[in-house]
Image 1 (tube, rainbow, N blue to C red):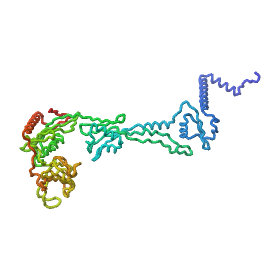
Image 2: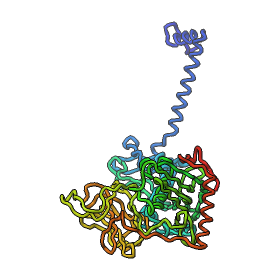
Image 3: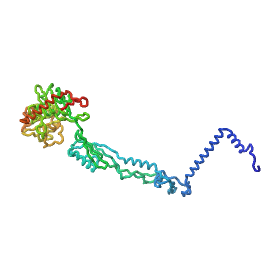
Image 4: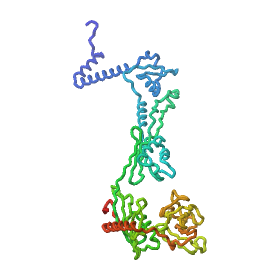
Length: 535
């Protein structure tokens, strides 16, 4: 053809054609050509799509070459307020040029999403439990408010409690378990970050979230005024309170226990497995008849017939009644029976003939004592000369409970020179008893308080002029000290007539029960081998 020349062997077109024919003549060449072509098509498509997403420079109204992008955090806040896609740039003059592009769905920034999740987490109430204990002079309402409970919640809970238990019966030392929630104030909504100060770089300095204040809401109160009662006051969904009293079903088991005394009555009874509160009550029973310092010797023996209450799980919780107790001291046997002549008065203990075990004064006002110094002339270890010792000293460890030798009124309680901490009781009929070198006084007692016989009034010590821990005990008749070991103490009443006949019948019933109950020389553990004797 005219105007067209055949490619020569030296022309580039000839060389390209020869290379193409050579590449297409082999399978590998043909696959390489196809792969290269596909790669070019895909790369071109991606570039075309990317160019389509860029806004036209003239639609924004400024030359992009002379501007820089907004800081990321400020861009986020502007984007959130716009509700759609947004393009913005910051000019050299500091003016912001913004254009919002409509979008089908608004996107929530990641920071705001995290902040919302954290605010939601903070609004979940946390439940806490706290134990409070009443001190002397405290009220339940005051203790609740001191623990952070609002006055309205405290008053509402106590009003509900009063329907099952009298709050006036609460005593110092009573513990309460409080459960309450730390609830955020729902009226305080979480705030977004606010641009409070902006530097040249556009960062949001000083942007802080708003923290909500928490308030406490009482959820429940739980306490046990006695071993048999568990009381719970709970908050309902509507905010009102209701109280319940769960009564434990205790089971009484009878024990006839005894042992031979090898050291002291208390230690021998404890080794035999007899509960401590039973032993203390038995000592009180015999304290009018027995001098625990001089009358008890190794080889003597005792028995006690008593009830004890157990939980359904087999745990001993409280002593019942001691129906009978006996001490064999040398060739003398002393038996005491429980009897209640008047149902309106407390029960008393009588010997086998109906004579009351009580005397006007106890012979020994402290348990487990040994006499370290008797009544009479002696060399005073501190003063260094001989003088009259007008009482009896009982050597006992510091803190041993000291009992009132007889019922009466506290005439003096405080510090009295060489006596140290001192108590003087007026027991009536011209009798008074004195207790010296005490470590502390029983709580709730003061001058003028009335105490009953065997009530704990103080605790032994070594205050004042004392070289060691002991109790100094005196009996005074019309103000004059007498020997406590030799003074004749008036005995209690003796049953007569019909009252005596009723007592003898009750005594025979107790004797029959004793004969039918096996003697325990080691009280069995309720959880393993309790002897459940039927009464």
